[in-house]
Image 1 (cartoon, rainbow, N blue to C red):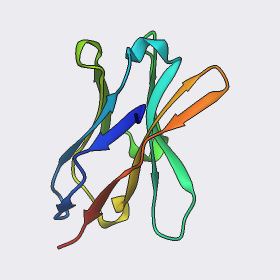
Image 2: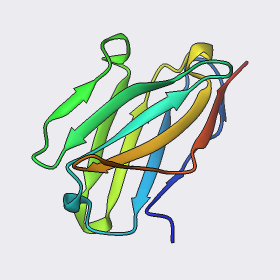
Image 3: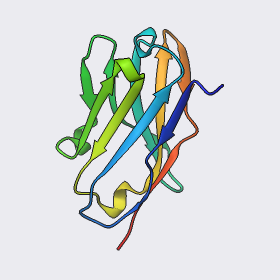
Image 4: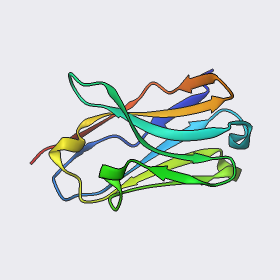
Length: 115
């Protein structure tokens, strides 16, 4: 069973918005931190946003104001809300979680921003 499973990726026009979801197979508070990364074609996987078990949020500086992370513990869900999408946001978005030094990744969900 996959520990993390993303959904919500889509083809979106520039200026549009999108919400991604990550379903965890267990209590999300078991993880030290959960977050989102993205990998554009031909580029490395980059940090997008994270939230630790205590609720502290981090967002990549270049993405602040357009990207928002949230969670629902009862549903074991992590969310990423993106507004004012740009073509440069085109990437595979991955859900990530860690327990101490052990990292877990979802399979990724494709977001494509194009007219």
